[in-house]
Length: 172
Image (cartoon, rainbow, N blue to C red; front, side, top):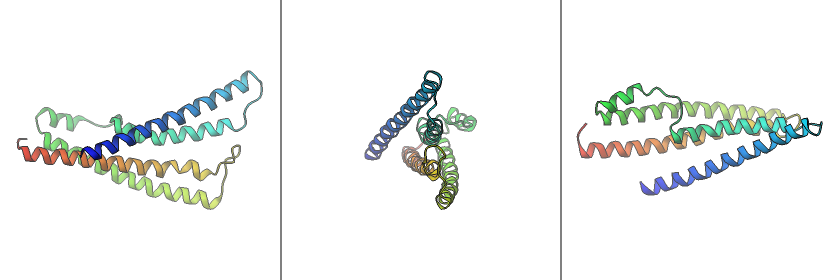
């Protein structure tokens, strides 16, 4: 289990550094756009489109980072009630079930994300000002879904391991 946690921790660091890097590029591009438009009187024709693409990628990849930090909107009423009453095994089981439902939803998003990307690849549409193929922008959906699925699998493994340990120790 310790090796697994080290792998996850290494991935977490890579993911966070990548998100910070992309955010830094977004800030620089946006600043350059504002500077050239309002100070120099001429806008960079490609910067707005690139900023939109970067923002979309940050948003979708941020889903995984939010999952890692457990910062997504969720209804905690039942898990907190179970925890307060000392039903820790039931709470862990519920958390595994919630992750499983989210995993199934992510598989659906992955499937339809690939359909959208394939459609964009077939049409050969490019961004009007950047010339970037549109499928690259849409690729963030299935990529994010895969990352979320992997993170959910990891969470389910950890929760299942902890649940098995609870059963071995006995108690509620």
